[in-house]
Each structure stands twice: as structure tokens, then as C-alpha cells.
Image (cartoon, rainbow, N blue to C red):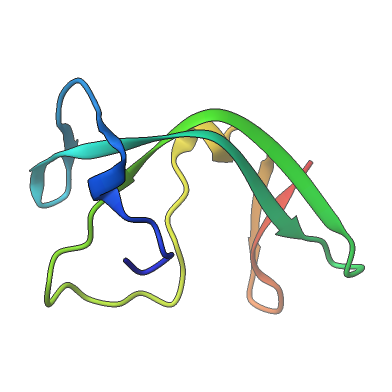
Length: 90
């Protein structure tokens, strides 16, 4: 429960997805509001009908970030620079 999401209380997705490590069961999280902090310290809200979440396995690598799917990233312009790192622009 890295983000505090308990997959035991969510509906299983109809089928597994294919990820880098093979097939993974996902769980549906309905009515999601993603909150992004902007460069000027304002907030941007992105509403999503549902997202698929993956249950972290014991002993899996803890990443310093969460992964967004292409369905979310495609709503933004994605840029990278050495000084700013990875940014999403509306």
C-alpha cells in the first residue's frame, strides 16, 4: 500500500495487463481526481472516470515516483530538460 490504496477493496479489472515483468492483475479505482502542482505553486486537477492500479509485491523496488499511464500522459505535452527534469504541460 504505497499510496494507501488497499486493492482488497477494489474490483479486479477484467483481465491482466502486459507489463515489463509479464502479466499483472490490475484493480479498478473509480472516480479519481489527480492533483498536479504547477511551477507557480498552483494546483491543476485532472478528473478520470477510473484508473487501473497495481498491487505492489513484497520486496519490490520502491521508486521515488508513481507511474502514470499513457492515457493520462497523452492529455499533456511531455518535455524533458536537464534543469527541470520531466514536466507535463497542459
